[in-house]
Length: 586
Image (cartoon, rainbow, N blue to C red; front, side):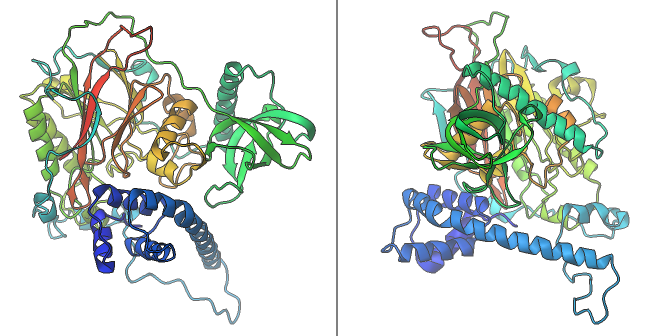
């Protein structure tokens, strides 16, 4: 399904004559469309119907929250039912293709559709002649009109910390003397490609079991719990159980479909959970939890208490840092670096101009660099290899920032069409870099934990916020969805705690166990997403969604942070090394 843009929603609003001048309201509507799989016209039809039945409610953030709670969450259940019916029909048709049709069968024969949907696989399986022949379709070299005419260039849209009088420039010699490495060293990090596409179910089960047991032991120790009871054992007294949250069907998790699956030590069985007595909760599939409650029959656990996970400690440096040292300027940007209607890298060139102007010490650049979802790539309208486009892109960045001398960190994305789309994802390979260039460039996997001048950065380019937003359910928590999801990541100690993962994430569980977990709570967590940009403090970790550098045909956002590592603390408490942060329009 194509992502809904603010422009499409504005057109629909104008059509219905609904006034809306607040950008945050449009962003909220875009977020709801994405989370609940609605198109712009469907969203407006539902809002108009809801507004009309409630005495013509005005369109505001508060009324949208009310609308989301009462209407869209109910409609998603109907949508899921339609998806299930459609999936069953497709399954039936597929089975028919492998069997001899019965005499007089009325089923329609399998035919090639006139306009097949463009998918990543279509581009990959297209004729090499079509992709590489000079007589083939050529990519658009015309700059995107919408991007060049964008407004609000350089506008600060999010501010975090004290920014008054802040100078957004790097040190006198950007990048010089910056200590940048993967936490744990190369031997404990994913540093090269690996063989995948072969996993035994037994191995996946072992990884999930070990996760339940490890997090369960931490929860047992922290909350001083004596022991865990089997989930399906009938008991007349209150019991404490450990398990992983899962759904009783193929649809979206809801309060009536929650199951708790125990590890082998607790019987390895599933039991339905009644959440009615819990005053507040936030749950998602794959979450390891401890629940207290009654299970009189052994067939349903009536939960009365939910124990939240505990985040890991922060990194403590053994090296004494200079307190009077200048703060480090870190720039963070996430692809795509081209507008959707053109393969010209105008947004990337604008970003390079900003790097030259602000002279940051470190630039964290996340993929996709060659986006598999780009219109021309989906339709196989490019005349050179994806690797050649990528090499040209990287060379532009490295050569364009040579005068600045900043450190460059490149993080791959599942949407980089020329790279392995497996999770965890190995780092890029750039064999053509010169020795001088290679000293400034660091190639890291997705996800990874970086140590930069004594400050830890957790980085992932996979849109975990989007994936978990569609699956998480909550009640009475009093916090926003983003904060809840980020807290789940930190307390579940994982860069991708959702299980099963969404269809587009190809998970290798053995590598994920080794390279997809958090070994500590990072000082800064970078989580780019299609959802609205933000900078938040969650249990002491500064979490940043820089947005994407382009959104469709228009410009997007990037982020910048001022970091100063300090061993000193106020009243014995830890002081966050992130002095200030901003999200800025390109």
